[in-house]
Length: 245
Image (cartoon, rainbow, N blue to C red; front, side, top):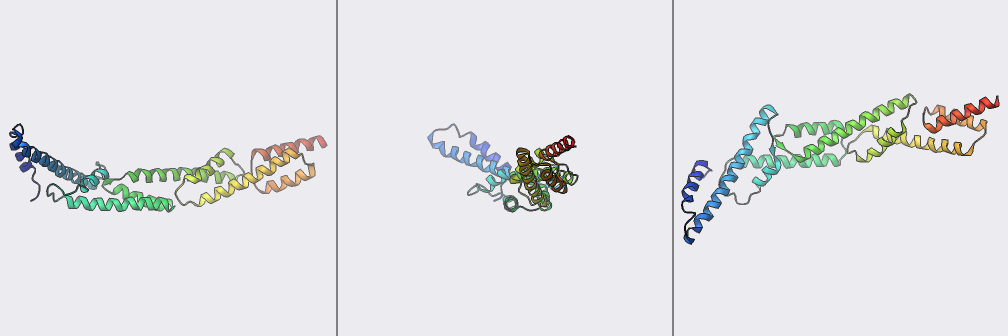
């Protein structure tokens, strides 16, 4: 028989008069506990289901918490027959599939576009998933990194390199769980800059003759880089030329 709240409430009211009886009334107390538990469970199912239409209607109302649904659905031997349980189980199953999809997506290094599409689906789903926050954070981090990486690459075309920014971008790559072409570009640029820094540092330590330094600087100019060590070498070359002539 389907759960009827009024019937349960009436039964509990009638049972209250026997709760303070002798030992023979202990069974009434046990029944009261079971009825109360059954009623709370059924009302919990109904409360969860009541939130879903409101959210689907405006997309702004409170979502149903997946943890709450999971607890209600997982209740063994449901103490009463609540027709809404079937619908709640369906939402629970769909939520599990979305959770798996999000976890698989984050471990598969998909593109930002694909993750955004998935996030839209999660956002439109009436059940609140913890994984939604994780997905949002990953997307936000990826977009922030992409913006900084794009700016860095554009500046590099102008021969301007902020070493601190480049190093930070390189260190953050390991944290990204998305597929971005800019990752390879930043990694390559970082390796190129590191190589030029090392070569410049060697020249700064070894004090080469002007002809050798001039040849190196001509090659460096072709690389279109602007790094502190290279600028120091250029200044040193310029000073030496002034003294020599």
